[in-house]
Image (cartoon, rainbow, N blue to C red; front, side, top):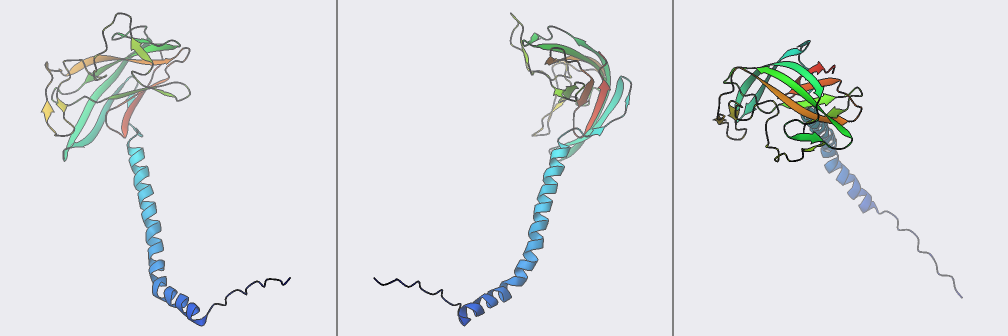
Length: 222
């Protein structure tokens, strides 16, 4: 019985070595140029992502004097820049069973956060965002963990910081067209917003904003 011989590995030919050297000579410079450009592109894209993420969250606290503050911001719609300046006063933060036909789900309590606002009647004031923070920094927002009270009609969608039917001018975010509410808003108004929190958890901070990154934040002190 004869042993089968293992074929010897093929030796690299002079032509193949020459071809590799020629490839590196022809493409090496391009690689040297492209690698830094690729790294710069990755860095730029990650920077834009980080910048976009952070600007979408409130990160610039505006001055607060006790229970009062002035919210200022600017925003762009349909290529035009608008300024916003709204006086805000935190009136009260109190536990309340039913508010606007809503009650908390089992295991939760509803807190009524009341504000007084002032702004020119011609200024838009829609689109506010309310966040209630507990002592651990956890954030709670309106509508979560709330349900219709027994016998109450389904809740009507409303802007949390405005009085239904008296919202004042509202800017269409797509067309830039101003639309007036059925009744004028007036220069000052009040609004109460319900926020559900787990039983035994109390509000520590109340944060309010319209356009990020600016926000105002008050001590809840219920």
